[in-house]
Image (tube, rainbow, N blue to C red):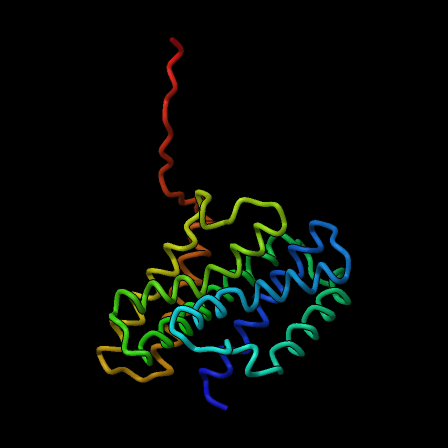
Length: 206
């Protein structure tokens, strides 16, 4: 089993846990929890595969992902009381999923011989889109549209991946460095409450 395969499993698992926790926070039933976990885990990868013309998409070609997401969802439900501070747990698993899935997206773009900028964008889409679907279905404003630095961290990781890749460094080093950078950025910006600027229109009364 390659590191890439391990990362794929970890990314899917992290996003599945993130989705299941979010669904439980919204007090959804068992079916709702599985659906939110599923779309969170495969949403970004589905968009990625469609954009690069890899159809049927990866989770349809490999049924083990369905069993993995189902098993992870059940374990998350069973041990929900063991996971302290759900909001912090949700943030942690979402951040891990973002870091790993960004790598998978960029790598897919490289294998498809796409332009480096497109590879970086593909990585961000892969990392962020599952969370967007999760938040929309849970009736929340997607995190990438809020003040938090989320997609920006994914883009930074994608740039890091491309630089290290073109320096011909070890594949495992590129994977670990990129994921670590994205996770570190997310942890730091949340800890120190770093925000992107907001722009509003001032409406004057006439």
